[in-house]
Image (cartoon, rainbow, N blue to C red; front, side, top):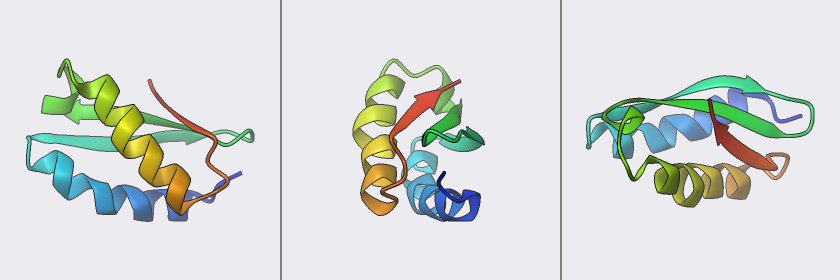
Length: 75
């Protein structure tokens, strides 16, 4: 299972990009299978591009930086 501190550290790198568009990301849970659950907030919460932001941005960066992460899902 990925360590919460490592996941938060990577999310901290991503947050300035989201904040530039008025959004943010919040870590909700990490399960034993390596699934990271996040909540997109602010402008990202209702944005039609949020699914792409999640998959092509947040998920790819987390998986590259933390090999234990298997997927990232929005809750």
